[in-house]
Image (cartoon, rainbow, N blue to C red; front, side, top):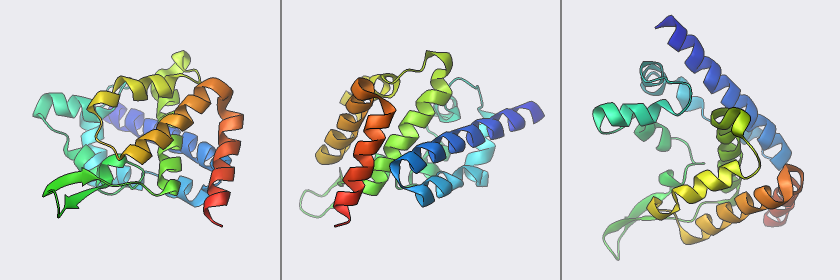
Length: 179
C-alpha cells in the first residue's frame, strides 16, 4: 500500500511538472500551476492509489473493476481542460451536447495530452505519440466540432513540426485572441 502511495504521488507530481513546463511554453503559467489540483482530493487520490499500475491511468483499472470510474467523474467535473467538462443540456434537442471550449482550456488540454503522453509513453514517446493516441479514440469521442478540429490541428502540428514551432504558434494564437 505504501509503495502505491509513493508511486501514485510521484506520477501525479511528474505529470504536473510536465504540464507546467508545457504551460510555460504556451504562455498559460497560472493554469499550469493550478492544473489537476483535484487529483489531491480524497475521491481521486485514494482511488488512484487503489488502482495504481504505473503504465496507464488508474481510472482505466477502476472502470474495469467497478464498471465506472468515480475518480474520473470527479476529475472531469472540476477540470475545464477536459472536453468532457464542456457538455450541457440543449433545450432545443433535449439532449446533453458538447459545447465549444474556450481557447485557453484547449491549450491546457494540449499541454495535458503531451505531458500524459510523455509520462505513459516513456521511452516510446515521440512528437507523434499524442496525436496517435488522440486519433485512436476519435470515433468514440463526443467533442464540439470546432474544439476537436483545433486540438487535432495542434497535435498534427506537434507531430509534423515539433514542440518549439507548435508552442510558438499557440502563444501567437492566444495573443491574437486577447485583442
